Amino acid sequence: MAPQLTGAPGSAAGGAAAVKPQFHHYHHHRLPARHHHPSLLSKLAFWSVCSLSLLLAFILLSPSAAPASSRASTDSPRRSLHASPSSATWGGAAWEKKVRASARVRRANGRGLSVLVTGAAGFVGCHAAAALRRRGDGVLGLDNFNDYYDPALKRGRAALLARSGVYVVDGDIADAELLAKLFDVVPFTHVLHLAAQAGVRHALVDPMSYVRANVAGLVALLEAARAADPQPAIVWASSSSVYGLNSHVPFSEHDRTDRPASLYAATKKAGEEIAHVYNHIYGLSLTALRFFTVYGPWGRPDMAYFFFTRDILAGRPITVYESSGGGAHQTTISRDFTYIDDIVKGCVGALDTAGRSTGSGGKKRGPAPFRTYNLGNTSPVPVTQLVDLLEKMLKVKAVRRIVKMPRNGDVPYTHANISLAQRELGYRPSTDLQTGLKKFVRWYLEYYNPELAVKQKQHGSSNGKASRGRNGSTSSAR
Image (tube, rainbow, N blue to C red; front, side, top):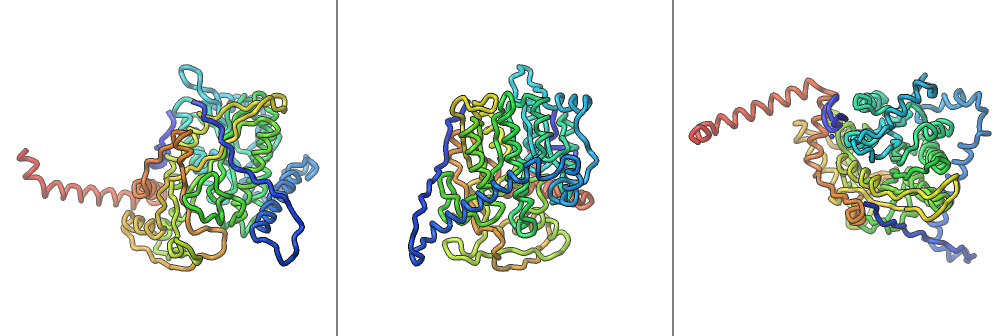
């Protein structure tokens, strides 16, 4: 039985109709210089980014980009966000045996899924892989354990999965030879593609890492999947960031997404367009999930709830942004915080309802599903309220620095319309922020500060005894 990942280290947590998002076709006309329309310029800029991303993806994936013999040494200086230093190799009879064993369906009726989970040592990936294994599906992980944040946390997640029989292959999503080998060894029915370069602000430091992982990596996976026999159905992580400068709330799948506010968002939107191409030409069944601010145990250290917790406990100031723009939400930065267990339910629902791919031998034989869903909580919470809750749970007062939000790719407000996912995936988020944060704080203390966790448990226990003592006469009278 797979571990419940929502606890401390060593513990854990029918076909849908295809829905196509609206795609707008733009006709370019020669206009006098004084009459350039802002919306047309924004559309031209967006499609230019998409075109550049595609060009870079195919350049990066081209075998001629580096000789095979020197590829490892060429990549090694740039492994900081491409792969963690590792002497791990793949291939051979023993390796193939581990891969097959991990991907083997374990349901009694034999009707489970065989799923390749990319980014399996990541936050969402480890929880999703564990959930699939718990119900008896075959699960094989893939992760490059890069050092965008502490690789030890990723190794810890992979260790949890290993205890439940899930093997995480140490490799890169852009490694076409590795992907081809995996699809040759295992006839996967589904792929849950969660590997990506995450984070909005880091794109200001290393923009190419986003193109390599989110564009070139996606193309590599789609190439391997379309050549596979059988072709798997693919569910993959897009992002709520694609809504960018959209001011219509709550965000709907039918809202415009051609005005990204960050390079991260642009690469995710480019991914959605690339996915449409592979669905249209090769018959791949593709479902994009737009996640809204996922949080919970084993989370990402680059997320605000995580580093707020760390800095509050250390007595360091935390920076809380205020919106510097106009509109209805001009003074409050709010996020549609969504607990990890709810996100995982949405991922599993998307896998269970994904129709089959229709290609064979790399050729499309008929229409295949192409779907896009929001996965959020539908209850935006101001970041200031998040800090209030953390202060209460940690029993430490935060030192707050309130500043205007810089132009770093962040947006002031997110709010998911999840009606489509509710109807077609049965998606029903059930965890409010206070409940979810309490679980995260418990895990954080036990993982990073076990002594403080013990003290807080003892404090809570003594308070409970005192409360029972005050009410003891009434209780005994009953």
